[in-house]
Amino acid sequence: MTEISLLWPDGQRTKTWRIAEETIRDLELQAIVKALCTDSRFQKAVSDTLFYLCLEEDTIRYRQIVLTDLHQHTALAEKLEELLPLLDELTQFSYRHIGRGSSLQEVVARTRELELLVAVANDLYQAFAAISSPLHSRGLIALQDKITSLVSDRHFQQMVEELPELLDALRNNQSITVGINLDHDLRPNAAVLLSVNQEPFTNSSFLDRLLGKGVKQNRGIAPLHRPPVISTGDGPTAGGIRRD
Image (cartoon, rainbow, N blue to C red; front, side, top):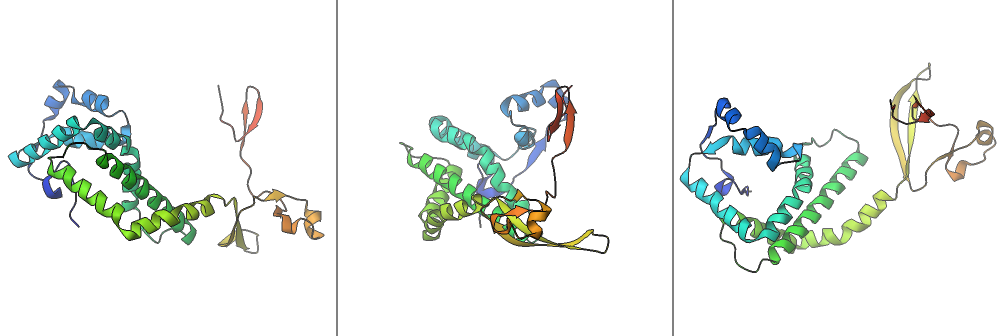
């Protein structure tokens, strides 16, 4: 698959030259990066672009035309900026290793990935559709074609129809049933997920459980974990944060 980049023609990096540290300091480029990018998550990417000067004329012209298009289509530029956090989150899934988590974790992660993909694709499709005059930059035209092809794909449309039901099913779950094996000292040595439930568990007395009461009402014998109690000036607070 050909990578689509708004910085590099055909997604292929060309020759660059890194600005000297003295120049970065003298021009206060670090301050410029922070002014351009208030979200610290993106400052490294902005620095890598700003501190490395492109030496290829074709790449420079490629970027200039992209910037001209974005300047002429401010709504598209604003939409791209608005989607940066979602695009960054979506990119993170590419770096996660499959098979390291449980099957439930895999399902939840993949569902979130699909939710992000649908949201980003639909928003970009609408932003491109609202453009009144044609684009000229190869990068934006390629992105527009890719988004249009994706949104028009029947598999994508089927996913859009089925995803809300899947999300509702996952988000309505409020508890899980876990089976834990213990050694002779009652220390956990193995655990397995037994079920996912739509009702939260509540406490019941040990005697109620021995008498068979509350079993069908999702009631437990006792809490396995409690939030830590932290003392504050106003007294102890469960799960609170110490305040001076």
